[in-house]
Structure formats: C-alpha cells, structure tokens
Image (cartoon, rainbow, N blue to C red; front, side, top):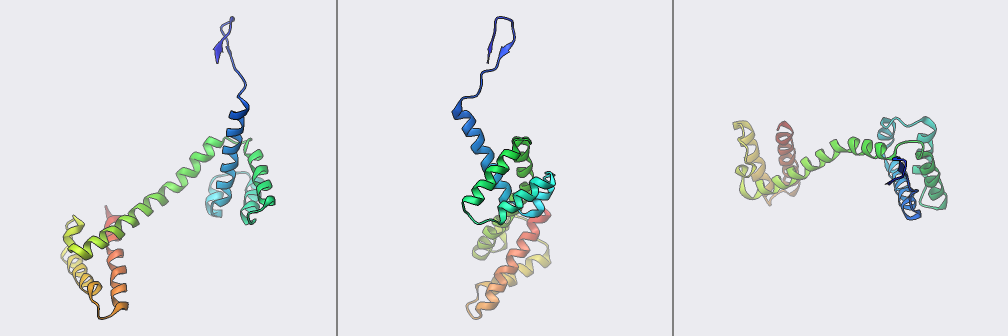
Length: 167
C-alpha cells in the first residue's frame, strides 16, 4: 500500500500468485474440515448446509467428485473467515495434543521404570503405589509367562499415566 496525493492509502490488488496461494489454502482448509470427526465439526458452529456438504465430501473416496466437492466447499468458506476457522480447529485439537504428549511421556517412563526401577519416575510415590509398581516390574521382566508380562507392561503404563494426569 502506498499513500496517494490525497493522503489516502491505495490498495493494490493481490497478485495472481497470491490469490492462487490463498485459494489453495482455503481448499486445504476444506480438506481439513472433511477429515474432522462429526462431533468436532458440529462444535465449529458452521451453518447446517455447509456442514452437510462437508460430511458428504468426507464420505466420498478420493476421486474427481470429491475434489469438486472440496472446491465447492472452499468457495462456500469464502463467506466465512478462514483464519478464524483454522484457529477454531486448532483450539479443538489442543486438548488431544496434550493427551497424546502425556501418553507418549507415560510410555517412555514405563520403559525407564522397567530398566531402572521406580526411581526413574522422579516423583515421590506413596507406599502402595511403590509396592504395586515394584511387583508389576518384577512380573513384566519375568520370562516365565508372556501374557502376564504383557499385562504388567500395560498396568505399569496405566499407573504412570494416572500419576501424570494428577500433575
């Protein structure tokens, strides 16, 4: 934007490349909306017609018809604020990301506990939790019964996950 002689800013039209980038970004948003589960899609508060079109696109297999449907949805999304929709989608998935991170941390801690013992957790445990963890660790490291060892692995994971959820 440049200031004209009269002090008002002149708005130059976006270049063809910029318009294409914006259009492709809205098409990607349409594809992202089609990939959302129905419950999350409802929480976005889109109008019923647009939501139904998105569900129709989600039900289609990858084909020319699905691509046309996504382009149509992208045109309809021009009526909405794509940046706001993107932010809403990110806000809806933030709790999931936190849960996934907690689960990955629990899995890593389980492996450390199996190798080093309960001291690898780095948090003080009550007597009951410490005794339970020690018994599960012994069972998990045992070669005598693979089924019981797998069960003990899962129980250690659940115990650690519960501890992380309390934090």
